Length: 394
Image (tube, rainbow, N blue to C red; front, side, top):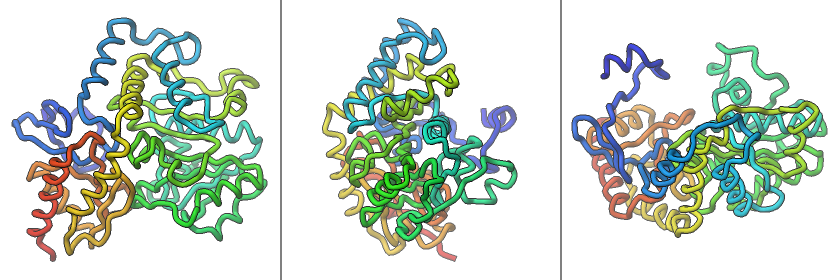
């Protein structure tokens, strides 16, 4: 199987981890050698209820027996998609009331950018340094990492960058700006939270100049920070909310949500202003609905903050310089990329799954399922500390 994996499946890196998966359940992944791994990554935040959660699996099976894909998005009334959009609206502040369902987070970003340009009639887009919003052409254009962008130029024009948490840069948001797009918590940069009411100040500046604010909740969203969406922690309501990853409960999904007035601009002049074949797929929408119901009806979000405290209390070691983030969106910062690499690979050897962050080489990702138990947290933290105790520093 490994030979076939490398021969037939396109790779994203020269050296993938190449673990051959047998099955996964709860907080654990099992390989074909019957080795058990405690999962501290949750599919890069895509599995908030862990693996094969009974409520999600049941919803998928029920929908499969009814119908699969029947029509392109937005033409037929399909109950799972309607119910999902309604539940999102009921759990979001006004005027975030209408949702467009797509297939991935980066596709949702593309839709949000189109919506902002269409609604404002402006073309300038402002993103943050060290931001990551996806890898399709528009999302890639928002990055400021030239080594990642250069091979694919020309990209989307009229993109400029400000520094996250730098209030002096807010003056760059002007009457020429269609939108400002920010991650509520910067992910690839190292799980950097907004400080000193930064998001609220960005909101106010956008209001002053008539620009729209897009908040990317693809990683912080769906209960991971103790609130359903990260922006709820920072007294800031976006004009356009983007989500993905965890919303699908392990299936591929993306969504962007805005006011009815804004969303109507994609409906006409031109018609079909944004289209997708598989967005709102009934099986995926059923999984997402079950995921959202479980998180909003349970105490998982409040547990998330307690579990953060537990992780912080058990992850103490001279090689851990700090732990960034909120809830179960955490990053441990180590002295060097070499130590990070050793920790991730040796932890896997010891039955614990950790992972890297995209742009911060000194960080390890700690984003376990929200359903992880306290005992599993203590076990995983113990493995990290034990591995760090045996790290060879050159």
